[in-house]
Image (cartoon, rainbow, N blue to C red; front, side):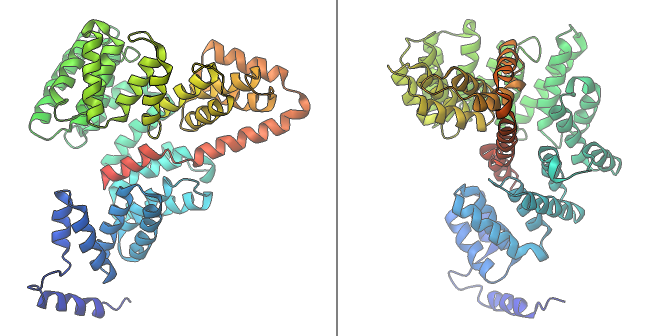
Length: 464
């Protein structure tokens, strides 16, 4: 049994010295964190953590995660471990951190699964969703585990998070459209507790409205009214309104309603600068909504708010030369600003150097940027790399590398990608096939281990 007397003694001393300035105080730390004073919060958390207070240790580690600094992330892992024995929350946090860790080993991912399972069993229901994502992303580390069966068991036990996990499962398995009725039922029930359900319901109604379902249109309009009432009362975040607006404008989901999307975005943009970029993108896709000057005005507002997506879209405009005069140098200038967080920026940079837009083809820069984009999930970049290695633009043609990237580009699922993969497969010398298959497995493993950093880290920061 743990001897708590030393800690109780410290607490008694702290209470006795309550009038002394500089005394660490978790209440003050929590209040400082709410108002954005992370320095005060960290100072109080750190002092209490050094005294052994578990909640303060977890709070300190949460701040270290939020910093995004690699060394702070390593320190956060150590800090969470100090609190593991006494805090289910520390188990949940460490499990999520390990699940998103760059270059994590199979042992670390299995430990993440154990920690998330344990914290969930001890009442941390927010562990369920990252646990499901871990199981789906790395099935090779959890052989024999039936994810759908686990979700079904959790749903039968009445866990609300399991219903949302079911929706995510349908999305990732490509069976979303076959379960629209079930998704609608789940999200209608969970709408007041989970604002992500505005996005899911808008998607369901847009898909149904594609077939002229009048009832779906009525339900969608009622949903939008409820969402905006929630936004105006502070119960629905602007980010959710932005995401729903983009669903309305997506022609691949249903019949686009770009005018309604524009109205939603114009209302939230003054308080949510990211929506200036969404508005610019909307005008890019639907020019009838406004002229180029209006789109550039939106982009300027987005850039003034330091939105990397604004730099990305502006760079794309100068790359394409459709709505503004083509200017590869300006394209590079803006794309470089977006590249650290926007994989598409790396793709366009790779294309600029692969096509010689600046004067000469630069194969090494093309390779570097395209590979960065591909490893961040850009299938188009895999297709470009397959072309690069098969055609030998600036390189000696490499059939092994061409095979690897042509196979990775197959999810693009276009006639061009299928034709290129087939052509490269036929040209691959039989003696090189074992090595090509090995490299393909290694590249897939590398991508599985790569921290899909921004989404993973941002999700942790949002939840914490």
